[in-house]
Amino acid sequence: MKTKLSCVIIGFGTMGKIRYHAVQRHGGYEVKAVCDIRSEVRAGIPGGVLIYSDWEACIEEQDPDAVIVCAVNKMIPEIVCYALRQGRAVFSEKPPGRSLEDAVNMQRVYDECKTTLKFGFNHRYHNSIIEAKALLDSGLLGTAVCVRGVYGKAGNRNFAEEWRNNREISGGGILLDQGIHMLDLVRYLLGCELHVKSSMVDKLVWKELETEDSAIALLESDRRQIVSVHSSALQWRHKFDIDILCTQGYIALNGLLTNSRSYGEESITYYKKDLSAASGKLGRPKEHTMCFDEDVSWDKEMAEFYDAVVNGSAILHGTAEDAVKVMQIVTDIYQMAERNG
Image 1 (cartoon, helix red, strand yellow):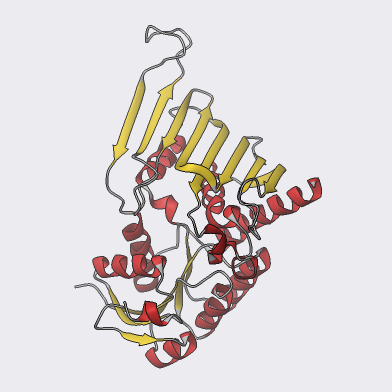
Image 2 (cartoon, rainbow, N blue to C red):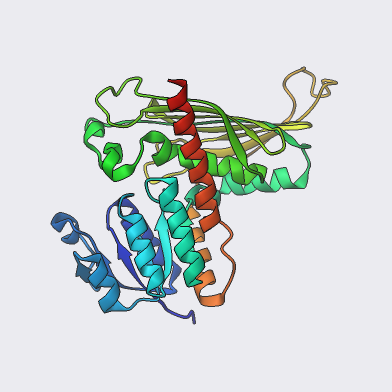
């Protein structure tokens, strides 16, 4: 019988619903209340839980063990810091606020309060990423020397009006919203820090936006590995690809299982270097491919948070330090692009 971890969910948009269903599947959580400021959203909250429009009252009155924060970027730091100071364990969606300063402040409060804080860098829990990390760590393909990442989507008809493109609420555009995942993944897969060498951030198609629709960055790791990342809202066909070039082979990650299923089949393929053309054709070595048709990343993520709070296990992914490190990279990309004009 699992120990019940009482929790409240602040924000019940797309991510709030995803987290709600994930904790329900886990079985160790008791959702006491859900909070959202939008009346039309509150009307759709499942029965059996209390409904609030005031997040502070929700936390105070329900006295939960944990607070799950699925609010807009602007509100994340205030809610997270308040909940930490109240002694609650906190799980928060990414990005960690609108700025590096937000992330640093949350880390500072976390260090002071000595409770649990985890950020939702969900992509680390995808099967293809788990396999890629294991393959890199095994040394089978030698050492990674170069990474190319592309993460692109198509904006919808109301894209310009979405809150994510309101700089006051979001803090940034496609880089902060989606590209941050790619940057976090590269940092995680390589196991070292990244430094921005050059970047371009611009409105190439969606001219009416307050924020960027495209961001391209060239980075270098502490080990002199070269990284390029392209985050785009003008891909038109959703795309997720990572190529990892190693001294003895090559890894290709293609597709990503999501609720929309619009990024295609999720797979990982690796090739060992074959300069003697043992396969019969130079440049076409044997390939080894794994495909995945089930996304259990949300469940794995909430299971790790539960184990940290209930059993005292370490947070492995989405730590406060991870949040600050990746927000530093995002900030450097924006600043470098601004200096380059």
